[in-house]
Image (tube, rainbow, N blue to C red; front, side):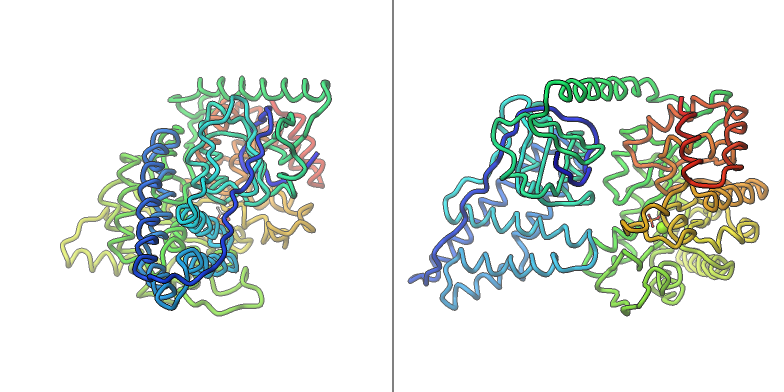
Length: 567
Ligand code: PEP
Ligand code: MG
């Protein structure tokens, strides 16, 4: 058994097709005619752009418009003026086109690969993809083509580049195994979109797995089993069948209202990271957007997005949701989310540093750009503003004052916006939890960010394996905190939602119903499953279980009791 990253859920059983990397090596030489060499580069670029455009058209049909847009970045990298100048200058200086292309793209590759932020680091795969595409054209070599594989193939490849994924025919490929890539890499995103089970970052997979091997790809556990015996194969076949049946059965919940077994209405909305995700959320039957992480808009740009750019993005989501609620969180920068062009100072403890709403309130002119864009978008749908990482009441008051200033400006300019726009806050720090009663008086809604709340409550980083045993929602301290936040929000009569990962945890559904949570915000793929789980519980049953749970003393006891209560 080989371990890797569980990048796309489900069980895939099929025959390994090990895709060997093409040989892109060359002997550097000095061209005699530099103009002709530059023309070779122009030709390679044009061919690459044309091929990529065709891939985008294919992907629009297979994985949808939003995901196809990922490939646009390849065209942008191929046509980037800075890179083109660099390559042409190297050719003028006597380099062959292959060497000039390799050097220029390697420089960008290294720059991305060395960034602290995982999202930026993973863009290096796109740069390498463009480099290889151009080199293949220049050398007349064919790249790996995944569009013509036999049925039931498990693709085993060093790196699944976005352009390779574009060629995938979903009906033939039942699993994906790679030697690189994390959960947020484009390949992982596309694999999830295609709903093909995938395990990434399996060491030496292309050497240890041979063409024709029978493989089980367990995308839930991040495990790969090669040539399993008949008994385990049977076990996995049963599991795959059960999962497929479960997924098909969830379709019964599409288009249905979300409510408990005794008819309490719950709002079930989606978390999104970019504007294209909104269409995906609609496809998955979301009743609105509970968290739009606006920082991704800032991370995908080389400079601060202008008011008009931000407005266009927020408006697009508001329009896509057709009047359903859209909660947009203002810039949550810092901690693990670095935005290089903001030039934030290095800190010893960035998770407790100058970040999120603290940074924004200290840069009011910059913050106003975002707040104005959000207000303008509120004329096109039910847009709500949410503040991240609040720890003190003053922060909410200051942000609301800035929003008022922006409103006056827009009034004077005669620009339309929703005068009653709701302003709420994430509750994701122990301090916010402890002053939930005070915050509730100033806020129109709460949304509980359990990802951070658990970390700060338990003093355990979410990404630190060694303290992972502490980082979980079943800790009595975390449960008490959740209970307190929801009860204070309920008392004040404001909507209380949850947009951290806990909202999608089926074990926690009865506890959250019992506490009185009004809104669950989960990733699009978890919508139907969460609707089903909510529908299985009456308030009375949930209360009885929760009363017992709240008397337990350790997280293991809590988890065990919740597990035994699963319906
Ligand atoms: C959270 O902390 O739970 C949350 C939703 O925010 P993020 O994961 O973006 O920090
Ligand atoms: Mg957070």
